[in-house]
Length: 353
Image (cartoon, rainbow, N blue to C red):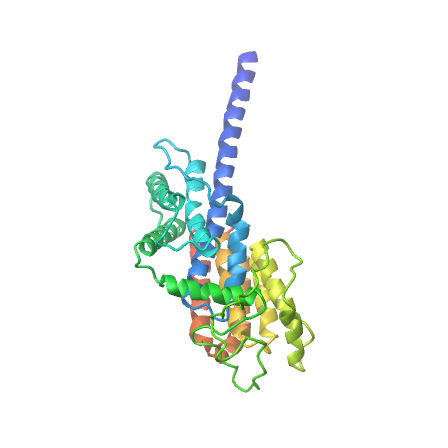
């Protein structure tokens, strides 16, 4: 009887260790997935930074996720490394983007930590894929492989955007974070049937992304939790439209920053709805679309089918207004992705309760 009790106890201990290890690996993977969502989103903004407002928020989110471990040395995983160690090594992808966007170290002049980290991440990803297999329904590993390949191209000067374009986008983000948003390539269009309003100071044709000597914008506000302190322009701009309440833009901007901190699709949806009502801001449509896009990505990462359905409903409700601002093609792309992601989750029975 005693030996049977000991055997049962040992089995329970072993089972507990296995379950704990699996839970640890799942938690690390979820962190990597959230980082991947943000990295892929930031890369889109570098090609089309708009007025810098959304990129400034994304960069703040990236610093919150990666900043505490910035500059750490990443070692190549050993042949017998467990899943937790391999998934931990994959953090080098977000680390590399943190060094470029926060540390301002060009891809052509990388630190040794960045070079070694990307190499280690590629090796870790290969080991994970060989152990788990290539599940066609799981896009995490293929998407991460694309980001590692993209980093390799950037390092060799063949990136999706040039170093100069990245620096221009970052200057736009600096200006937006300091209360000096400026239109990037393409600018914004007013919705059909609406009367344009005066843009905030520093926002308009001729302002440009550059700054003269002695006129550099102050440093972006540090990362942190809500409540956020925003430059005065965001509180004041709500007064420009008679139909808007004072500080409407500031409220939407704060909602977006809060949603980035929580990485919550529901919070991103609320931010999108807020921007859709704050049409006195010249770039309101891009901000609303950006929040919807991130909300869909977070819902997929969370395997939250109910929230994906809510995002699709929000896209239907807000899509016509955003599309009227000249973004109909972008709205269609986000709506299609939400539809495909929901179908994939349900077909693979991956929805979380």
